[in-house]
Each structure stands twice: as structure tokens, then as C-alpha cells.
Image (cartoon, rainbow, N blue to C red; front, side, top):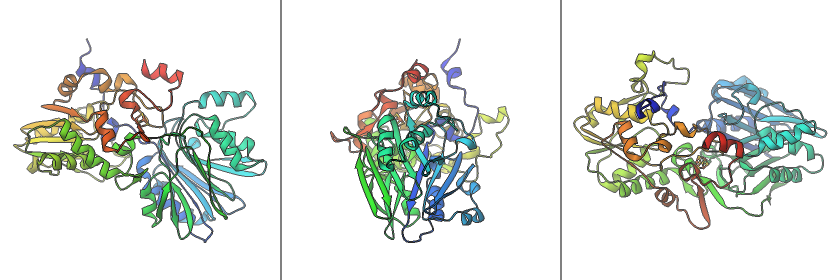
Length: 481
Ligand code: SF4
């Protein structure tokens, strides 16, 4: 008979990130009338967005007449070198870092995607996921369109390219009105940079300015990295068109409601980013405080799981008065190429990446704060190594609500049978991870930490099963059953 232990003891890998929702993609775009080095700025912008995707990176540049581009598999710093960057010159550029949620991880699927049409070329970089891409793809294929990749972003690109010869702005409006899902997109033509955000604003996209030139990017941290000023977020259902005449805005959706992904604040986004007016770091501190109010415990020390659990641990400490201390030292040099240890070593091997700071936990009642529990495998290992380091008690606190459902909007999530929160109750999860007590922030609590209001909502679909856009029927079958 399968026990809970067997059921969830499937992780054979030491990467902490393996037991998290996976990152998505990051996009960046710049249009310069003032001879800025757009390629270097795009490179640094993508570098700041690297946490959003590490599988591939690419830059397309336009000199006003034609495109040049380079794409490759791996990190931004692996894909581009000085010589390559110098070979790409122009007045406008877009870039992309990718984690594949739709389409396989191959160079062919690396973005930006480029297509030629009668009057020129169009490139696109997309963060998000289209829930009706399969239907549109089938219709276009019936009409004779041949797709070059397996990514859903090509569906938008092909819809735009079909109409682009009339008017590019109108072609983009028509294309995005046909698709459903989450999208933060940057589009490049020879003489324009265009940004689009879906009608629910699920994925972030903001506008910056540098020396009078405009920039579009997924997170404001990318603006800081190149010394640009934040101007504003692209509104849900808005298209911005940037060219030599300045910036123009079009609202393409009748009904829009901001329902940004709450997981951006909990885990995905960098703490130094501000999305839709809410600073990510501040929201994590607030969540930690609410987490304490909802799940108090007597203890000697609060520690956070690096990196995204730390602000919530600070908030928990502040609200409870229990001192905060560093609980783990992270080995900064364990990269993606790290060779996995043998099977026998794997169960102990979290310590290769994360080592407990014994002086802070030995003989103490420890509250450990993490941002989420997905499968539960890493949480169990963390509790184990704290006990091995001499912790007297281990109280696990989680600054996201219980993850019970998958995401359809550009985040790679395991299917429901692998989500511990979908299959076990609180006591069973506590037992499974081996903690003395366990507590999660509530859905109301996380919404409070984000200043949710009647006008300003958030997607909490992976906690509640209620999504801003209905899930595709096929995926319903695969994921929810
Ligand atoms: S389902 Fe979860 S991860 Fe997906 S967009 Fe909504 S809050 Fe974000």
C-alpha cells in the first residue's frame, strides 16, 4: 500500500528550486532616438531578469531597416559575449529569457521569435501562457500556415503578421483580441517597439525612461540595473506603441480588471521590484507579519529559507518579537551544471546547497519560514537538517496559502497528484515534513498583504481553484482529474 511517505518521497534532486513553482519568462525592450547602446542595455536588462528564466536567452535588434539577432541555450552571460554584442547594432531591441512552460526547451523555441511578412519583419518576446493557443493554431494550420516552433507565442506572431501590412497597431489589437490567457509581450518592427499586457494584467510589464528614450520590461529591477527611471506599469488591456514620435496608448479590451499573479509577490519577482504599485519586499514582510498573527508559536529564533523566505521571516520576527537569525548559509557557487550525487547521498544533499548555521539553531526552538510548499520534499529535508544541527523544536511556517491547484498562466506547476496540499490535510503535511507544528498564511491574509481592494484584485487560482480566466478544457482533464 502506498503511504503518504512513499507518495511524496519522489524528489531525487537536491536543487531547492525543484520543489518550487518554476519561473516563467522575462521580457525587455528599448527604443532609442538618442543613439543609446540599445544592445548592451538589453543585455544588462535581461541579466537583471535572469531569475525569470534560465533555459535560453535572445536579443533582436533593428537598425531601422533590418533585424539582426542572436539566441542561445543557457544563461544570458553564457549566450552573449562582448564580440557578439558588438556585432549587434541598432536603434531598438527586444530581449527574452525563457523558462519553457509551453513548447519544449530547444533552441528552435528560444525567443524572441521572428517572422518575415510582405513589408518587413516582426519579432516577439512573450511572458505568459495562452489558454486557447491550440485552437487558433489548428485553425491557422487548416488555412495553410506552417508553424516553425511549438511555442504558443508563435500563434500571436502569426496572427499579427497576417494583418501587419495594413497597420501594425491594428494588427496587434486584432491578434490580442483573438487570444485568451496571460501575456506580457514586447514586439519589435523595423521602426516600432510595442508592449501589450493581457486584460487581467496577470503577468507584469512596466515602462521606464532613460535620457528621453523608452523601455519596456517585466520588472522594475531591470530599469534600476541600467539606471533608467520607472514611468508606470502598462495597464491591463493596454497596448503601448513607441516610435520616433514618442509613446501612444491603446486600450484594446472593454472589460479589464487588474488581477496580477499573487505568486509574483510571494516568490517569482525580485524583492527590489515594484509591480503595480506594490513593492515585492514590503509585501513579503507584511505577509510574514500576518503569518504570525494567524499562526503564532512560542520559540527562541526565527529563520528564513533563502532567498525568498527571508523577508517573510523578518516580518514574522518583527510581529512576534522572536529574534531573527540567519539559519542557512547558501553555497552561491552551486550552479545548474552541478553533478548530482549518488542515490544514497541525495537524501542528505540539501546541505550541499544549503548548510545550517549551527550556532543559531542548536538547542533552540526554531521557527523556519519558507515562501511555499509544493511537493513537500524539500521542506522535509530542511526540517531534518535543522534537527541534525541540534534544533530542539522545528515549527514550519509558510508565507503562501496551501497550493492545491495548478497554474495555467505561464507557471510550470506539477499536476495535482504531486501537490502535497491537494492530497493531504494540515496534520498529514506536518507529519510528512516532520515538523513540530505547521502553519500557512490564509488566502485572505495574502490578499491583505497585497492591499487587495474592490478595484485591485489578484489571481489566487493555485490556492483557491478560481482563476481570472477559465481553464482550457483539455488541461482541465489532464491537470484537475
Ligand atoms: S494560478 Fe497561481 S501561479 Fe498561476 S497566475 Fe494565478 S496566482 Fe499566479
